[in-house]
Length: 236
Ligand SMILES: [Mg+2]
Image 1: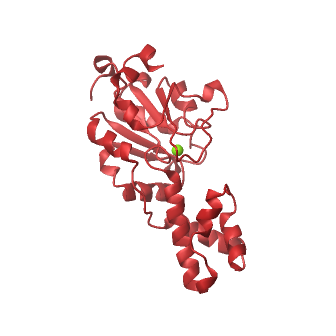
Image 2: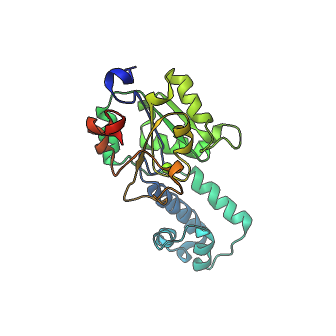
Image 3: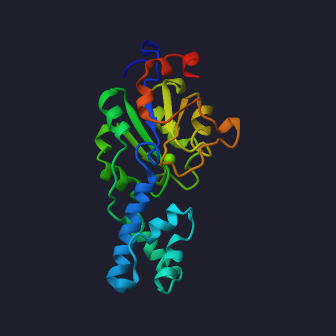
């Protein structure tokens, strides 16, 4: 592994997944289509494709399946919703890395890892669909850890340091959600970068200064500029 002191940059790059390497809403749209296709097989023309997506795009974030079933005139209920949620989580996603993600992973040779929250099987199926798994030395879906160890718990970040064998400041965590992503790595001395994609789902403003990343970028293309990551002064 390259030494951070030699390179003047964090030697280990650690990424979040959703809204960091690809647009999370694309997974949602893909899942909505799978759910609507399932409902259409059962209920035919009552199901209008694109309804869930339209609800999402109009700002609905909760109970989208309930609202869609109501629009279709199909009876809802906890069991039915649970089945649709399972179908959504386990569908084979039609998603792709953001173009700047592909460019970055092609050109940057530093060791890298992923730390991602969410049900482990769902996160792994996203990574498989994105075709990026072999490009990362370590992938930690926190859903595989004991309950309560998702972000902002430090366990996954400590696991990365055990894997890399390097001290905190040799790592950088690149992620999108300041509400939970940067607290643990900052406490461990990691560098932090918030990626603020146009397609983002979560609010980009940190709830407090402790939640904030050191720098904010709009695309991984900005990480190609060595001046931005050269030293603490240039980094900030
Ligand atoms: Mg994210």
